[in-house]
Structures are given as structure tokens and as C-alpha cells.
Image (cartoon, rainbow, N blue to C red; front, side):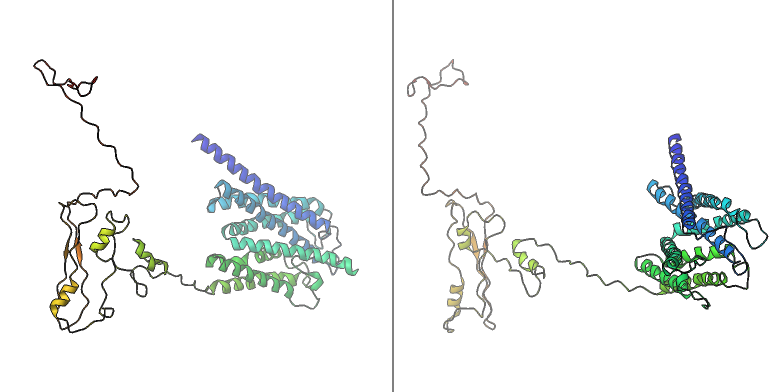
Amino acid sequence: MAASVRQALREWTRLCATAVGVAFLVGAGQLGVLYGLDIVRWDRPFEAGGENGWSALLTWVAWIVLTATVAGAGSAARLGRRLKRVAGWPGRTAVSVVAGIGGGASAFLAVLPATAARPPTNINPDLVVMITSGVAVPAGIVIAIGALTWTPVAGNIITTAVWVWLFAAGSIIWPLITQEPWPLARLAVPEQFVLPSDPLIWTTLGLVVLVSATLAMIARFGGSGKLAVAVSGLGGPALIAVAYLIAGPGVSGDHTDQLVPYRTALLGVLASVVASLVVAAAGRRPPKPRRPPSRTPVPNGETDYVGWVSGLGPGQTGNPVPAQTPVTPEAAAAYPGGIADDAPTAPQAPTQAEAPKGRRSRSTKQREAAATPPAAPPLLGMPPSVEAPTVTAPRPRSRGKAAAPEPPTVEIPRDTPPPAPKRSRHAKAEPPPSPALPTLPAGRDSDPDEPTTNILTPGRP
């Protein structure tokens, strides 16, 4: 009992360490990439016309915490499946909570640099960053539990994270190629494809719907349940929408640089859910009827293989099995010892169609005499004293219908001794038996058990 408790504690310690470590490393790594691409700059001037840039930076902080929490929970759950520890709701919730702690801790790497920021409003910047990461932790825990419960949700989260980071990298690399000023890289917004007059970011909205519908169809035809397919659209779009909800639509309502992606993210969740629900409601193609297994009986004798090989089975129409015919005296004489696997057979009597041609003016007695087989000679190897098998002649039928005569049957007596072995012509003759030794006459005092044969001189007593 104590050993099992220690082993359980050791395994759960390993799971918690994995969840915290992976979540912290993923969050810190993403924050380092944002600093390297110059997407997050806390010393950026938030002057008139760029007040909403502060909310865009907070959106990236919330995104880091959310994705780090999901990554830490997923890594711990994968290790738990090998250790057979994370199986139900309590285990999933435990690893998700621990991963949320690691994801929130990674956001503190942005608190110290945020002290140099000059936000457009009179607020404490480092405190706002801490509050943003603290609010994103419970939201990330809920999304992580959903990803561990339904596999299509996790697939949507991974796919969304890939194209979000591709858009972020393209937003920075494109100005370097075209020699244009760097725009404010916003979350899930392809800056190189967005026009200032777009009421909604149709590129982002169309991509969200396409990814959700494709993953839902893969999950549907892959064997997932309808509930898992229906909620698969809540994976990646939910992360983007929660990040925008935490950061807000922007400080200034006069500009739409943050309000447009904010509305697009919320509308993307609705559109992706509708797409996944349509795929889940669509019925799958019914499976093709399988061919029932063949119930042809297994062949019992060598003659049954005629129908078995052709697929019709023994005795089926179109390929009949030859029937066993009674033994005739000629066949019995040809095979005195019989056949090991099957009894000797003889060809059947010719039918009416195959009857020999002849004059039809014979009398009935001549027909009976012709149909009666001759007397059977004794079988080879039988002594003369044993009775030969009797042959029963068939009964004559009426003259009204000319039918084929029934073949005679042979009745072999039950007490038939085994046949004598057949000698070959070239067999050597056996030597004659040696003459018996003479015996001595028994005397009065002779022992009955003592031999009376003179061994020294044969022939003499």
C-alpha cells in the first residue's frame, strides 16, 4: 500500500512538473519571438492616432498565456496516458490548472519591461499587464480542458496557432521587402492583405471558417462523435476571441484599428461553430453491405471436392456429386483387401436411354435371365468352407413402364476370416520344417517337468 502511494505521488509530481515546465517554456519562447520581431514594443509612442496600440500589445500578452496553458496541459496529458494517470475529468482538470500556473508565470517576463511604457491613459502599465495575464489564466484552463476532452478541438487550436504566427511574421517581413513603414502587427490580422476601408477583415474570417469546416469534416469521417465534431469549431477561434475580449476594443473609439479585428474575432467564433454544426448534422454515407460468409459445408469425402472447388458445395445443382454404387462380385474379386479410404465402386447399370439395342420381342423370362447376374465365385484368399457372398437379384417390375433395372447388392457374411496374403511368383520357397526330436519314455521316478529328449544324439533315446 505504501509503495503504491509513493509511486502515485512520484508520477503525479512528474506530471505537474511537466505541465508547469512546458507552459512556462512555451510562454517565454513566444514572448522572445515577439520581442525579436519587434511586434511587442513597450516604449512605442501611444500618441494621438495610435492610442489603440496599447490594447494591441495587451492582446498579444493574453494570447501568450492562453496558448502556453493549453500546450502545458497537452504535454502533461500525453505523458499521463503513458503512465495511465490522466483518464477522467479530475486528472484533466488537475494538469490544466497546473499548466495555467506555468503559463501565467511566463507573462511576468513582460511585467518588468512594461514599466517603461507610457500608456495613453493614466494607468500603471505593469499592473495592467499582471491583471491581463491573471484573467487569461482561468480562460486558458477551461479551453485546455476542452482540448483534452475532444481531440478535434485540440487539432483546431494547433492549426490556428500556426496560421496566426505566419500572419505575424508576414506582417513584419512584408514591409522589409516593400520598403514600407512598419505597421502595428495585430493578433490574427494579415496586415499586408488588409485595406483601411474594409468593414471586416474578410481574410481572417474566411480562413477561420475554412479551417473549422475542414477539421470538422476530417473528424466526422474519421469516426469522431457528433458532439466532438460540433464543438471542434470552438478551439482556435475561441483563443483569438478571448484574447481580444480581455484586451478590449481599444482605448479610443474614434479609430477602428483595434475595433475591426475585435468584432471579426467574435464573429469568427459564431461562423466557425455554425460550420462545425452543419458538418456534424450532415449524415455520413451508409456503409456498404458486406457479403455474408459462405456457409458451404466442409467436404467429407474425396468425391465431395467436385462441388467444393466449383463453389457450389457438395450436392448442389449444376455440379452433382457422384453417388455411391453397390459393390459387384467382380469388383470384390479385383480388390480382395478393399480400399483404405473408400469402398470399391462399380459403374451404375445403364438407364433406359443407354440400354443396349436388341429385339423387343423377347419374353419376360429371357429378360429376367439376362438381368440376373451369374453366381459369384468365392473371393480370392477365402477358404472353400466359407460361404460366398450372396447376391440378391432385383425384383422384376410390371410391363406397363419400362424402367431401368436396379443394380444387384452384395451381402458379405460378417464372420469372414481375413484374406490370406497373396504370394508372388518370384517369392522364395520356405524351408521344410525340421523333424521332431525323439523323446524318451517316461519312467516311474521321472520328473514330469524334465525334458525327455536326448539332446546329445538326436534320434536316440
